[in-house]
Image (tube, rainbow, N blue to C red; front, side, top):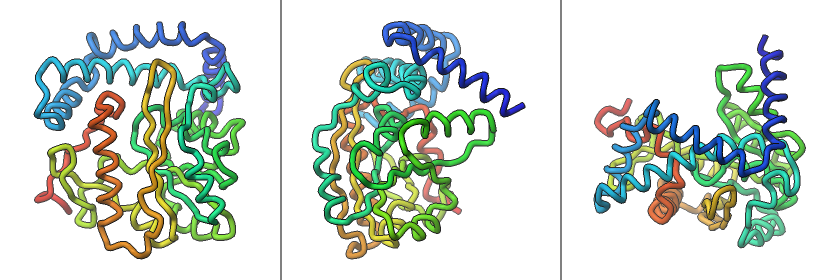
Amino acid sequence: MAKLGFHIIRLWMAFLSIHPYWLLYLKSDCYCFLIYHLLRYRRKVVRQNLLRSFPEKDAKEIKSIEHRFYHNLCDLVVEAPKMMRKGDHGYQSRIAFTNVELVQQLYEQGRNVFYALPHSGNWEWFAKMMPKLTPHRSIAIYKMVQNPTFEQLMYYLRTCDCGLEMMESKTVMQRLAEMCDSKNAVLLMGDQTSLGKSYDYWTEFLHQDTCWFTGIERLAKKLDYSIVFVDMRRTSRGHYEVRFELIVDNPKEMNDGEIMERYVRSVERFIQSNPDNWLWSHRRWKHSRDQQA
């Protein structure tokens, strides 16, 4: 049944992928009205996150960011089928890279790279563009979902016609250690809500005490990977700009927590300058330091 469901949804996505962008965004506007005004999808979570993160902004500014966030979220949904299309009909021509020479230089220097991308812009489109940026072996780390139909669909969308490899998060350390003979560029998104464990990294982030997964630091130090922050912002509907920022080039020489602090500050600067581009609907601050396990 899961296989049949996958093929049905894939055919439907293929049909949506040939729709012009104006029609997809018309649908997005309808979806936005539905989830924001009628279903009120996570309205309390989003509003609370924004109020705590931007205490200096008044109610009008907060509501404006909130509205733009929901429009962006719905745009991401309707943009997903375009991952099946190439050229002008797909997504490639809609992403502008301003300093891709940075990652090209790292490849020429023989460096492996972690792309540190928060949930901003259209992270799925960026992942599919990775094989075109450098000759690195392009890998994206992901966490498998329980629904087999959705899991199969997302795997297909992310890997079809692009050369991107997917690596389940539980196997990352072992598998990357086995790939020492290749030069790798690995996408790792580390801004999700952590588990609130004692080994998490705690620091102030957007005016709040926040815990972070330390996987990117531990992996970089263990495997000696450079870390490049990916600043991906929406410039207009269906168009994005990507800038790269070198965070770490010598991870083995850095103190514990130093890499995490650099990464957190990069994420914070991005959000403060592009507040509607981040994924505000997740419960990012559900743990407190005194409750950690």
